[in-house]
Image (cartoon, rainbow, N blue to C red):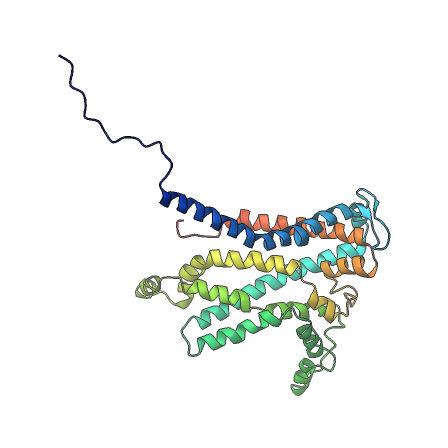
Length: 318
């Protein structure tokens, strides 16, 4: 007597997928091809506008190139020359002072104004648009020319001081105040970080403030204990962006100083000196080396921001 056998199960099909699966796979592939087609302009821009010039400048940094003749390989001569160039160190010092002073002032002003606008005043959308306008115009040539007129010897600033009985000065021709006028211009372009701060303030739960008020905390205590810690990721984001932008500042100093960086190199930004070397003196090899040094400095400073952020930036899961 043979043992009973198990009832046969469903047969395993080894045939081709059903037509619906085939249509789904074909649609997926078609969409993939379409996505690649739309990515082609971006890829071309990345290669032709970014990657190729970047690699070309890296090669030119080790050459003597005057834009007219073929580049000549000189090795590390351009970098050695930087160490002996007093104007290179002067431009570096001016740029560092500008970054260290203008970025914190701009962020502090933007945060203070964002806190005020967060109180739900009427016409908030209009105020946000008006306050954001300087960020759109602050790096333009027109605003830099206007700034030169404001702080000139016969400008509006001195006219206002004259009404108060105070004798003004030529702010742009005084080495001790020329850089300060550009710092004020950068602080004036607070609109972009202010909008980001305002968006961050809207994400803080109102229950935290209600609990603080029940405990008797005033507005300053609420700001220190709730607003500032909750905004640290936004502060960090703005700090990184504005620091990178400050290192690359060029238009304001070029227009206000007439492209010379004066008086006495007091407004000689690093990028302005790089421009002078590359497009005025035709030392494109030296300018390329300066550009790579600037890139490395920005990279190091940004990395330091990220390394130090773990000590003061608090996220929701901390």
